[in-house]
Image (cartoon, rainbow, N blue to C red; front, side):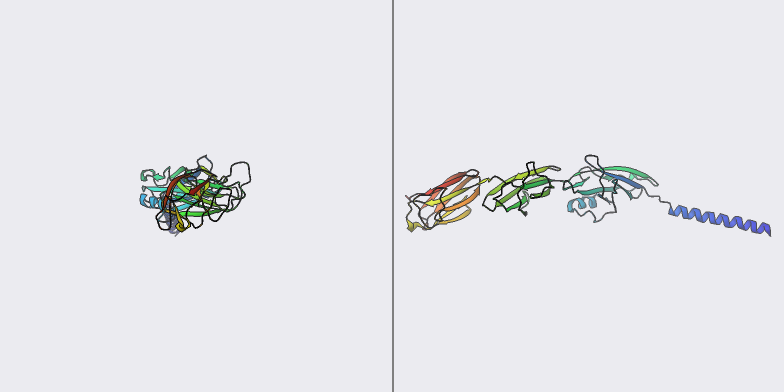
Length: 321
């Protein structure tokens, strides 16, 4: 009888050992783990970065194109205070790793898009831990509009990419009062971050000044636009000895810009005068062609005006020959 219980005890012990081994085998993780450390272009660890993993290049490319990083991803993680995170993948399968974050100090989007994040299936083996250091660099740059002039506020700013007609509108409402150049953290500026590329802006102040120009945004760099000095001038048209029967006289600039009409004549006019009988417009500096026509169309005046910043050009409309 003792022998029987002895044998039974050994049998139970073996069964329990087999169950324990089976359970341990089932719980043991055979998938590879990627230990990721995120750093910026200066080698500083980045916390709070989003790590998105995709199973193929199509999902990866779509996420970059649409900026929808959560769509169709295999898994994701957030880097901790030390810039570290772990993701579990599948052995023998390729993956694409995309790391994105926003720098609240520089007001820039950072990612590893330009550096790539492909991992070959040959690099992923069972029960393996890989240590990966991922660098993120700026995706875009900053544009900062500002003014030191107190008499031009508010300034309405329209900014558009030169390859797109869609413009965003912004309003500058404060004067930048410091002696150093503004940064993205300064108040009383309009600070924008944009993708690398060429942009065109049109700005107009409360006193009628106009600024029009193009600028190139470079990744990680700041482009400053000072809206303090008026880059536009005025053009005034008046009729001196024109018979009133020709009135009103219509005025156009550069063929398509119909700026108004003149209904009364003036003996003389200078920039210092303010008279409603003259037709005055503010335009950005540059070369302008004008086309003037009498009411009946019998008399036509044409010419060219070269307008410089802060200048005033007077165009007299002489007697029709």
